[in-house]
Length: 100
View 1 (tube, rainbow, N blue to C red):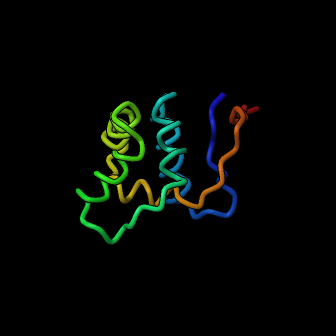
View 2 (cartoon, rainbow, N blue to C red):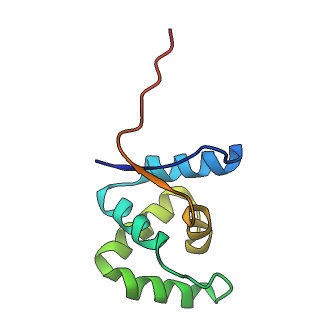
C-alpha cells in the first residue's frame, strides 16, 4: 500500500509538486519521505548541515532513496522538506478517474 498526500485546499502549484513527488516515489523513497516529514529540520541552516542531519537520522539505506527522489523531482532537500512537511497523508490507493 502506498501513501498519498492529502491535496484538498492546496493551491495548484503545491498540488502539482506533491503529485510529481508521489509519481517519482518508490517503496524505499516513500518511507524516506514519511520519515523526513516527522523530522525537525532547521531550514535556515547551511544545506550541507541539513543534509548531514537528515542523513544521520534516516541512515544510508533511506538517504540513498531520498537522494534519488530529489534527483527525479528536481527539488533540493530543503525544498522537498518544505513541500511535504505538515501535509497529511492518506494510506490507500489513489482513486482512478475515468472519463466517460
